[in-house]
Image (cartoon, rainbow, N blue to C red):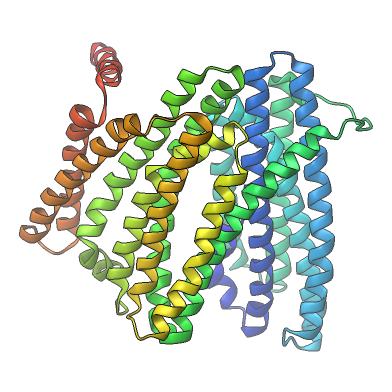
Length: 486
């Protein structure tokens, strides 16, 4: 939902400064709820998947689902009330809105808040779908969401009056359509989601879910503070031009992280179920896989971008702000470092070992801000802020590996052998080849296409012969043989 608001920003900006000011308030509300929903989605999926691995009785799994649903309803209502009170104060005392538009602001705030309540309540059903690895239905729902939001964005342009109100009402209705679709589907296919309203007497499940979500939210909040704080520091010391460069780099990095996180999302249910079943060996194997495959995909996308970033930005932007190339390259490097141990976090969360990892890594995220401030205050260049983030991601990767070894028995030597050395060799070879391609290929769109095709071919070969171990190569060869026979 947040993405739909930001993707249609150019439409709403055409409505005038007043409506655009109201839009910014809506965007803030959406960001808050999306933040909470994403945290709760990770938490709920973990508990449902873990219970499915540990317990085979539908009634026990259903009890976890029901308690989770009740908790989501409570959180949605509580935060909605808080946002309504806070939003009312913001509209009354902070936003400069003409008297004839005040009623529109209150209406839109209430409508969007109601809509996002539906988004939060949908989370337990999505968690069940992911726990059952029903990626197809989840993807269809996401596709439906994207198509409807795009249609609404276009339709708003043809509405003569009350555009903002119509937009808010239409957007607010989407989560409830999705909630009904997922509710009906889950009710038909998964017995644990069939419930009757009853009094909750055992609050232990809610307590565990709440505590888990709290630690995850601490880590996520610290990451958000680091990223937003970096932007504020750059704006304070260097102004909007450098901040624009950082914004562009952040967008590029965000798109890359969305692609690579899809693999972790697919592996996470099996990893958590293995933890619930007590299958330590399979859990460890999946942990290495959850580190290696996202890192390979990140390298596949990041390496050609890092090498050819000047050309990419010259094609994408009319004017490239200063330092944009450097910022993009450094943030892509931080993404590679982040993905190298992301599977360790998934494994620790599978076993509920979240306190240490989220507290200490979150603390390291927060330390970036004072460190960057000291550097900028002493005359260091803008890229020193992003360099602090790269160093921070290196430290975070080390901490994930350390806590996984302490709490799960992860073998550091096996991780270095299975993930570190293999991926380092692949990324190094691909970087050298891409660099020579960038030098000799034309610096235009077709040159980028040629670099992309070359990277794909090189990375495919390197992945098969270096990235995969013997058993993984055997599985890939078997799949290819069946495909060729067909």
